[in-house]
Image (cartoon, protein in one colour):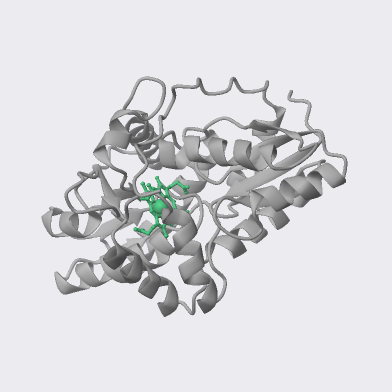
Length: 320
Ligand SMILES: CC1=C(CCC(=O)O)c2cc3nc(cc4[nH]c(cc5[nH]c(cc1n2)c(C)c5CCC(=O)O)c(CCC(=O)O)c4C)C(CCC(=O)O)=C3C
Ligand SMILES: [Fe+2]
């Protein structure tokens, strides 16, 4: 069992009022060559929800659910918005925390979903005198707690379909698209992001019993149009589905993010309506009791071996 004196929940961060949106987006895309038009489009998604991303409240809810289950003080720091990791680490140092376990709200290997969190934790630690040591907990995409939560939510979604469609509905798992070059180098030997997503989808489907067919597709593509990203996009895939109904399973996200409430619940839902395809979206893991208890199980495991220095390498930086 790891010898920790605090739990640090590490997340992406998101805006909480209209004026936060552009500064938040600028933090996210700094040096990443994201076209201005894409940024303005994404800004509109956030403004449609009053400039509030669901992600921060999801983090607060998770921490509230974790508190009674974990015998450690719990802190919260984000990469891209308040509360920033650096501020949280300063608070932890002031409280005398020496060694914290980090639970990152991203289950998979890739630069964006793992290495970038590790790098940002290291940068924040370097800026804080006496910062605690931070041990990142292992990837949990295949942990029985995450799988049970997603299987439960998938079952609930199947039950929400109109009469009789549950048995023949196709499961369409979705995850954030990433550049093909990032996917090819994900993990210790490449391809880990997609392989882990396929593994999680396989485990969730197995838990539902039978041999229900499923697909893994992508969403929320960003970047310049000439750079290849993982395909197909969920909206291009739906018209190709040869089944009377679909349950979308956002296996790539552990809680509701703007990508879930806009890209799936608005865009993909509109696509399905247009083609007359009954579609429901499974809930994200969020504060499902098995997902919550998974965190204390991870804390009780032997300390994880850190990723090697060459795991999930950074893509080349563009424009400063
Ligand atoms: C793999 C992955 C995850 C899953 C792992 C994880 O959960 O961390 C994830 C999560 C998230 N991504 C988020 C938001 C954004 N991601 C962007 C851009 C990008 N994402 C990428 C990948 C991922 N992103 C990539 C390769 C880019 C291109 C720029 C770059 O190379 O970095 C942009 C720029 C605008 C645009 O979309 O073009 C935004 C606003 C939010 C917050 C949502 C909210 O507010 O609720 C969350 C949780
Ligand atoms: Fe993203």
